[in-house]
Length: 466
Image 1 (cartoon, helix red, strand yellow):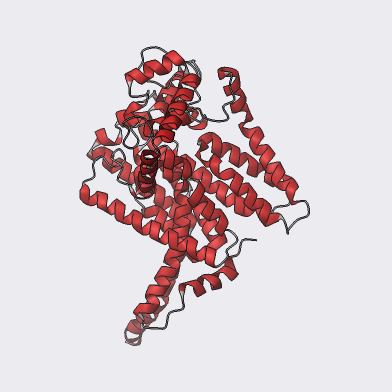
Image 2: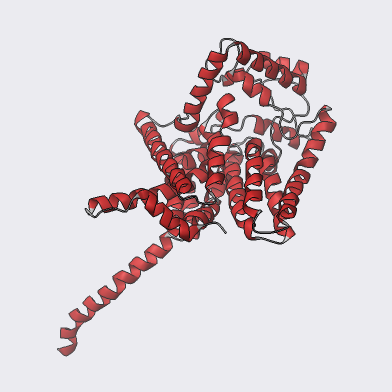
């Protein structure tokens, strides 16, 4: 009887102890970057599997993915080397510097085991994209925690789990976009972390990370002068030998890309540091009768342009397209300006890429637009607060927002090109979301809310970059 009478009290006591412990465990789990990374990967792999069972012709649509990457991988596997990017011509076009070397060799490695451009190879490469997206959680968390604190880091990671671009890009494109985003996120984190290092080998590894990142995709090369200048500025008062460290990283960076640059010079007889196709993408958006960027003019799709490319050779062809584009821009400045402004809008807000979302209707497309608008708003709020608080890393974030898109404003803007800096946008969005949520909560509770700027100043004291 006594035991029976005491049982309800014991159960209530156990529940009072168990529920807080469960909440603490759940909170700790949801704040773990490892758990978030596993969740990111598992959700995307599950999504690919469901979509493949549902509409396999969309997931493994080999006609809309891969492009020049697949053709170069095919050339590598056939023993003809890094070249022949055109699929529309029956004969070879020779060596190329159209693409950066790392990702085509990854595709060639996978294709050697599963066949070139097969359904199996496409699914493996899509799964590999999902792995890169999952791994990106770790640098996102490390960057945000170092510069903005733990809460911003956790929110940034969960934004990465949910944003549409981090779903659409890895599951639809056999391209270097996801590896590029992961690589640049690692470089950004390493830039913050290397400030505290006084051993040359750490700076050597930092330079190698830049070399690998640029050989994955040369788009991040535009940021290197600003990043290295920021490092010099931050180190000027910390170490009397600061120049030695930055010079070591810069020299390692240059030596890391030198083999590819030397290969290009030996093959083409001209100095081509990384890629050769700038003139072409500039011309496809700036030519007589142009109205925005026209991908159908690429030699990959256009037979006439492919024949001209083959006849002239890659270097001469790209040089001529660059000359035509610059001449058009000079003679039609108003048209060129209008095209540039349209590209600015496309880069930041036109995220309903048909190739990335061929099965999505207008309602789901509007979800993409809404999510993108929220992320961009929180990102702008985050950079504003970081600048106001004089966060030491704020100029580095600002350089990414301002200078990375410049080349895409005059060439080819697309959501998959912006994806390279998407992890940095997510970090800023996480920081902005922290303050926006606190302000909203204070307003709802009818307390006198501390200003957003005051909150940013207070947080700055705790999260300053060393």
